[in-house]
Image: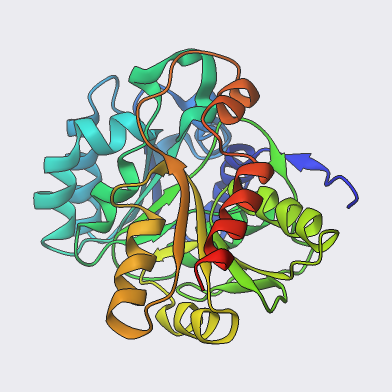
Length: 313
């Protein structure tokens, strides 16, 4: 399998905002004193009168974003994922989700791949929190091109969004001209023995696992489930029906994330052997690749999970 080139999803986000700012005069951007990391700095330079740095006060960030949205603006609010979700959850619940306001929370530095910043900065519960909020569309792009498409879809779709981005560069899986559809799973590889359903940086690892399994005679389907809410239940049911076993892969706790949501769909519609490649506990400070290896978020862990799931058919 050829190595993929790599690109930064947060860099793609920052540049997409600038293009959207030219197209949508009602678009405003807010940050919590992290614009050089979240890459909203590009928008701030181009449109200073439409950029608001709220300082290290994420609760206020969400409240101001809600107020601007209530006044007719399309508000993008950015900070690190752990601050956006854990610290400002009440403001997102009461001020954004309940009135269904047009706020797009784009959170960077999610998961353990934030690395050396340590466990206090490693958001691994955020998807469980955000998927619990009715009305929020929750997206975890697999690469930079999908990030651009997801941000554009959010800007042009009324209502609240949560888009989760990583800190390090990630493999580029999609070609130029790729079209993203909110709420639709993307079939990246056909397979007959089992299905891997992945999101975020785990999608590239799922493809690598499928490639390695093929050399051993196992055929694995790979679905990129970028949208966790609303979930493409039809694709999950079809995968279980046609391949008979499912493995989920995510850079998030096993509780409440992609695996939990897929399990609900299978339990209600088409029970099948299910394995989850996900975090079981908090990690530690370290290099991103070292942490992913230590926490078993690897192609080998996915391949091993496929074998366990297939053996239970």
